[in-house]
Image (cartoon, rainbow, N blue to C red):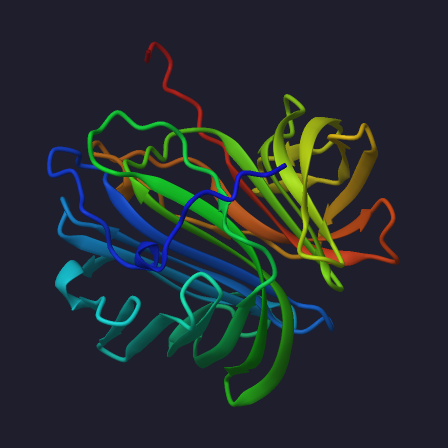
Length: 320
């Protein structure tokens, strides 16, 4: 069974931070994929109280193009936490309002996004996102141990999302499978990892680990809200570092009852690459990206879409 933890509505808000930990981060993350082949997107909001700044990434993929906002040096005091995190400054608006806490949320974002790929790459376009989100599972505890006396925590949660996305004056209705991650505590970015999130009709396969070493864990949700723990046992998916993407391949998972599940993945868009220099006291940049994939999962009808995210961090030679 998955550990659902003892999270409360208060965990939707800000927590006390360790003033002695430079990396302390309060983070909200959410991703969604339209189940009818329309827009897909994600955001990450991070509050870094000991650096007196906030970061906001928000990206949308639609009609073969990536549009995004990458703001990693926002003024911390401009983030309003009265009713869920919100930002409204200099032509950029963002909000994540729990409705109700731990069960749903209202996500909004509007501003001028940079077109990163596809038609019109390099131009700025107006983007507006308005999605109502509902949980399809309990929060799943996922917090690693941290060397601090201050409370830390992390949970992941399966969700659905519905609403509208507008890009450059064109509007889409969205009916999406979604996932969120909520965390608070010290954050070390300099680690290699891979995250996958495959979304089908009333089903999801989510995993975290290393495709190179064939290890990790995750869960599977099919039809009901019950989550089945998975162990990532092996696979043939690798990386194409020149293109900042993954090479097509197959990942294999095992459930607690011994059932084997395979997921065949192939990238279908260019990747969004992230600036990592601001995440370290001494700036470092390494390949860190997210892309949309097409997948076939054991027992699922047809293909589905999903996310694959990878940090390709390698410690400098001679570093401990």
